[in-house]
Length: 444
Image 1 (cartoon, rainbow, N blue to C red):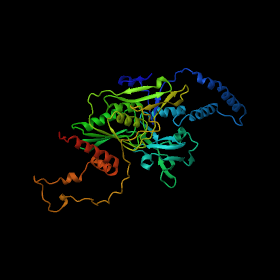
Image 2 (cartoon, rainbow, N blue to C red):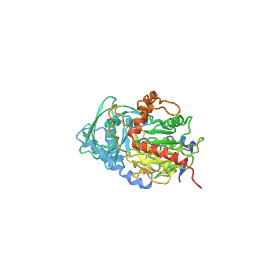
Image 3 (spheres, rainbow, N blue to C red):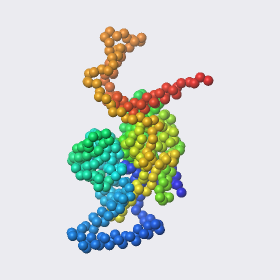
């Protein structure tokens, strides 16, 4: 049985979260034991027997909690890269992250093909500024090999007090030898939404992660760029977005959809099966949208891209996404620790599983690194108005040199983006062409 969730009920599942890859927070109530688990509980006697032998005969006394925690971590680690056992401290840190800030270097990592891999650096963070890239394989943390580290242990080693340094050794495709990065840890405040106009009637919104107020910040950004103008297009940029809260991915998608399905989840138990439909907006947004994605777009970012793509609401441009399509449930345990357990997979409105396959863009455009800018003072083009003794135009106007040479900070930022980012340029050109062709009248 599949549960359909409307907007009101969405508030009731606010405990459902997708933090950097798909988290669901639930209460730790007892669950029925199936017949298939009977053998597991019988074999607990062996575990107890081994524990007694260690306590009795091991050469040095051991902390019982440390032994039990170690056994639990090993058991959960054997399931998949995203399931893990969390100590009380780790559990509390995870809850804090959903509120939008933590101390570290600013990367989302996972285990892919048994190698610690960067999903994406978070824009504006120390890792991003240092040059860490999506797809980098972390083979060393402070000169310690990572091949035997769990995902949780790796995160713990990378994090640390503000101002301290961590050295990451990475293997990068195309690089002849491993690269080393010395990165200073800092508080990572996640400002998840940035926006501006790329032209008088085409907007740009960048979502770097899905945090607790991303939908509110996005709504405010849209209101600002829509104010006083008939917007003719929007670029929604979720490149290098490692994910976030599932509820936020749903609410963000709902801002652009008036009907259809947003996402569905399917798990082992009926309680994990869910369908979330879109709700009609009071003020529909009818302008065309292009969603930018790449290999660093994961989980919640893939939900949004898939929802808008399958509902024919947007074109997706860029490269194939990461392919993180599983949901983790956080189960609080009695001593304050927690269990992060994969309990479901999520699917796009067309029923496609994102797990491993990712979202394939409608228009494939590889990112091309920008060439070096001309030297300062070097002009690439000369305009008529720059010529000495140029004639005025027919209405006697002279160009506003002050305005031309005194761009605002936002205008300068837009120029830099368009100069350096070929994917944004391509999306902008598509939207401009879209508007031109929509105005052409066909001959009967």
